Length: 227
Length: 72
Image: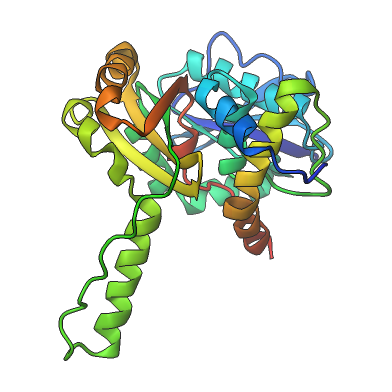
């Protein structure tokens, strides 16, 4: 059986049809239970280039506009149709939940820009000097998770964004001027309100700055389906 | 692919004005994790090249190593 290139998982088959893929190959859907994968026949993995990245993105965006819920699949996923079916079946529950989360929503990307990284959070005590190695380990793990998954710089924006942001993912860079990329999941019809809230609140962040882009397909909210 | 990192001022300017750019495309698609089959070759020109350098720079440390480990 020939291999397929996977673009995205969808809540439904796109209408009237899925159009063409990044190599101009016709797209079709593979169904596994309630999951619908948008795929194109492809013999081998495409080379990573600006053109192929943009082409992949264009296909995903077109699909995003045609369905209510989409989980973009990472670039370069070529596998046999049976391997795809197995991968989706094995993670059906998680993927279905992820599709429900992104339904009717889009990703906004907020980049936090500034001169230097946020000061490290004060070290936690870890339950006192009597804490055992297990407790200290867990405390360190928690602190590390927070350090890499939090954007404390956005605190002044939180009150106005809270009602609009349905989910958040943070990637810290701490490489000035880019301190962090914050991915927000917002209702599609709330995108203008989100941009307005960021614009209105940005002065409170000085000397830090934020740059919002989007709406994008919810790339940051898609689990690794084929990992 | 050139490994020259963007100059600090250059990077700041790009990030400050980044909008619907290749930066987002690369960030979105590589953050999800490109599946590497060979060399990453981004043959670009002008400003886009800088976007790509910057993004790949950021992705390279944060993401590509994880992906490589995932792929074993």
